Image 1: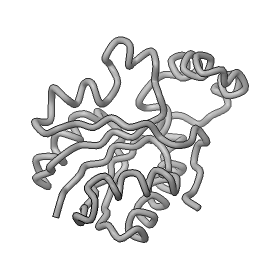
Image 2: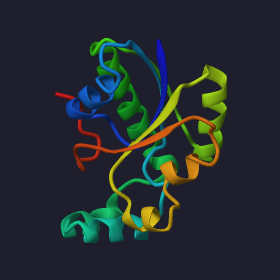
Image 3: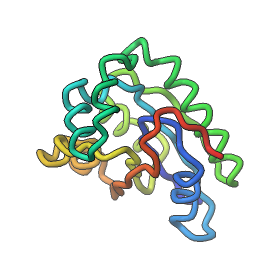
Image 4: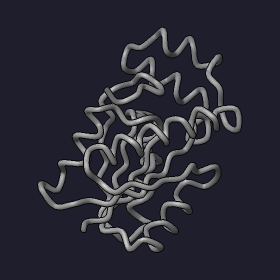
Length: 163
C-alpha cells in the first residue's frame, strides 16, 4: 500500500478526491490528511492579494468577514470530516487531524510516524507565497525527506462538499 500525507486547507471537492485517489493507478493508497483551518496558513492581506491576482475581487472584499485562526476551527473540523468520508468512499484508507500550529513541523512528524512515501500539498494558488517560495510545498521539500507533489484544488469555494 502506498502511503501519502495530504495537506489541505479546505474540504476536498469530488474532483480533488478523484484526482488524488487515481494518481497511483490501481495501487491502494492510505491517506493521512492534515488540514490547517483558514487564517493560520497566511494572513488576510496575502489572501486578498491572491484573490485580486486571479480577478476574484468579490472574494478579496469578503476577506475581513471570514473567520480566522481559532474561530475557523469548527469549519476546519467539518471540512476534514467531509474530506475523510469522501476519500474512504473512493476506496482509500483515510485518517486525519487538524493542524493548529506550525504545519510543517506537524507534517514532518506525521511523515516520520507513518513512514510516508510522499507528501501531496493540495491548496488554492497562493501567488505571493509561491513567488517567494514560502508556500507549504516549497518549504516542505526541505523538511520531510520524501517527494513533495504540489497540486491545485479544483475549486476556490470554501468548504464545498464533494458531490
